[in-house]
Length: 350
Image 1 (cartoon, rainbow, N blue to C red):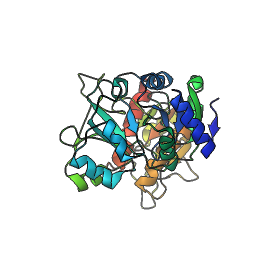
Image 2 (image 1 turned 30 degrees about the horizontal axis):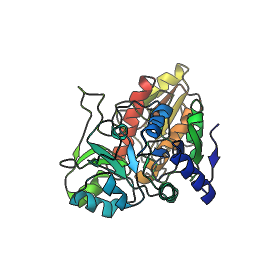
Image 3 (image 1 turned 90 degrees about the horizontal axis):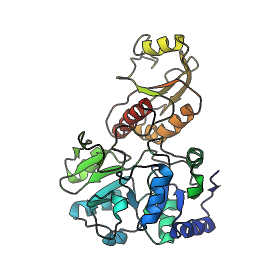
Image 4 (image 1 turned 120 degrees about the vertical axis):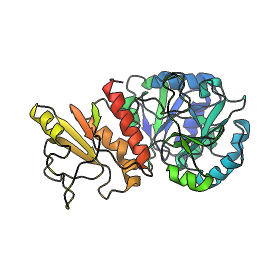
C-alpha cells in the first residue's frame, strides 16, 4: 500500500529528493491530487504514463511555483500575462508555444506546453523545494475518477504502487475539479472546462471559443481530459437528459424522470443517485444510496464535492448510478463535462 504522509518540512524534503531521483510523488493541489514527476526528465515522465496506464498521445500539464520559471518553458504574450496577473495561483492552465527545454513526452509532440501555478501551499512548497517544474496529471489510473483526497490516490493504485514513493496528504481539495485549460496559441479557445468559470475569463480578455475533439483524430487531444470517455467510476453511470420536476418543497414529482429508476428497482437493480440537492430525505424511493453535491445549490460546493460523492457511491457495489444534470453556467459547465465523460467511460468499461 502506498504510504500517506503529512506534509511536514521533512516529508517535503524527502519528496523533493524522490522527485530528483526520477520517482513519482502524489501531492495535493486546489483542484485534484496530482501524480508528480520532474517535468524536464523524460524517464521520470515515462513513469507517469506507466503508473497511470495513460496513452502517450495525451499531453501533461507542467506546474510551476514562480512566474520566472516560464522563461525556460514557453513564450507568452500580453493576454497570458493579464490572465496570470488575475488568476494565478489558481485553477487556470494556459497552453502556450513551448521551448526546446520541454521534453516531447510532456507535450505528446505538440508545439505547445500546458502550464499552471497551483493555489495550494503544499504544492507550491514542494515545487520550490524540488527546484524544477513538476508534470502532474491527476493521480488516478487513466480514465478513472479523479482523486480529491489522499485516500483516493492510495486506493486506486494498488497494482502499481511500487512506482509511487508516497502521497503527501494535504486534506480535501477545495476546488474539486481539474483546472480550466485555455489555449492562447491563436484566438482564445477553451480546451477543458474546469475550476475557473469561462465567464470570468471572458470578462477579462473577451470572447473564448469552445473546443471539441476532432472526430477524425481521436488520438490527438490538444489537452488532458478531452477524450470522450473519462472520469469514470467502475459502477455504470447514466446521466439523465434533464433535471427532475419538483414540487414547491423541492421533492420530485412522481413520474418526472423517475420512471426508469422505478422500473430498474423493481427488476432487482441496486441503484444510486447523484443530484445537486438531496431531494429524497428519509424516503429515498428506489435508491439504495443518494448523494447531494450541494444541499444549498452552490455550484462551487457542488464542484468541490463531485468526485468525493462519486467515489463514495462507487464503493457501495451498486448496479447503476443515476446522475441529475445541472445548469451549464459557471462551474456547472465543468460539472456537466465530467458527468458526460463519466457516463461515456463507464458505458465502455474503462
